[in-house]
Length: 423
Image 1 (cartoon, rainbow, N blue to C red):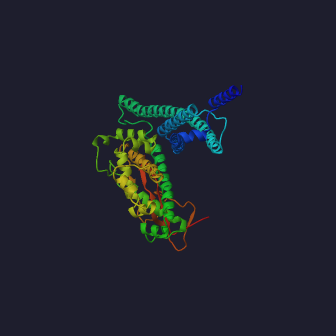
Image 2 (image 1 turned 120 degrees about the vertical axis):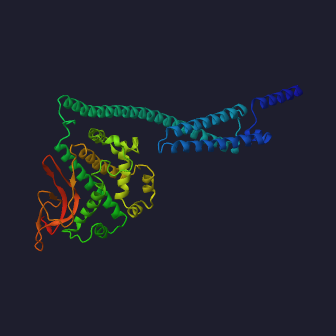
Image 3 (image 1 turned 30 degrees about the vertical axis):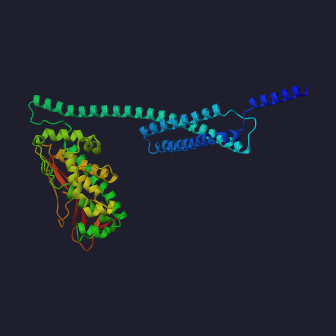
């Protein structure tokens, strides 16, 4: 009986050993290489997952859909690998009834990594939602661009048709004038005002950049035109407007504005007006972007080289890369060059319009020292009195040429010496 009891007791013990798996510590002792390899894979995978997540974040600034999709796939791949390691561990290591302190620490770290894994999964879903929203925004913007392009093409077509229809009607009536009724002295005068304002507007960023670069503006103004007596120090800004005017209007009376590559087909007066209509409603950057080597594109490059001196540009940008890019046939998208393009467009439109008239409109300039004439000149200083030491005010600088059209005069704008400004 005692033997039988002992035997039953042994069987019971044997049964208990089969039901309860060995502790993790004992399992590790049996195959430490396998456990160590598994843990190493887990930590390597976690490191790769973190790296993939960082790439996913970086792809959002700046926003790059292709990089985001690639990083998203990489994150998902690493998550799958980590999930596979988790299932592999659970299949080969059932939960023990007894957990040693070392196993507890490992279990806690696994729990922490699982929580981190869930966090990454939530973040990935968030990024995927953002990608979807961004893709939708891109599609909408593309639709807006397409609609705007169609509207612009329609507007340009209507402008051309207006000129051609007017031409056809006048020819049928036997009239010699072959242009749209829009080609009037009033249109030319308004275009002169726009060009004059463009010169003034571009002088502002030019002067501001010179100040930022540490230029002596007094010395610079004197180098442009010496021996000018200014009523106020602030009036020296007109020296820079004078410089811009002289460079931009150089070659104005020539049909091709002094460009080397002349296209004889564009000398027809109707073509001059059509070119005016085509560019008038366009952004100048769009124009040079579509055709960098057009006559207008060549005009912009040649005039920029004349207006902005190499020393001036080197002080602005620290090198001549900007200038070399333009001389190489490019049109940079820098704020400074964009400001210049607005000026170039205004002068180019005035030139196209002047040569569209029959006879073409001639511009006139007045030289330094000429006596002031209210018929042909307009003072940029509106309220002034003659200096007591001067007999008559005289021209110091011309900041916009004049012209004669339709029996009337468009006055040139001048800065006078021998005056005092009235506050």
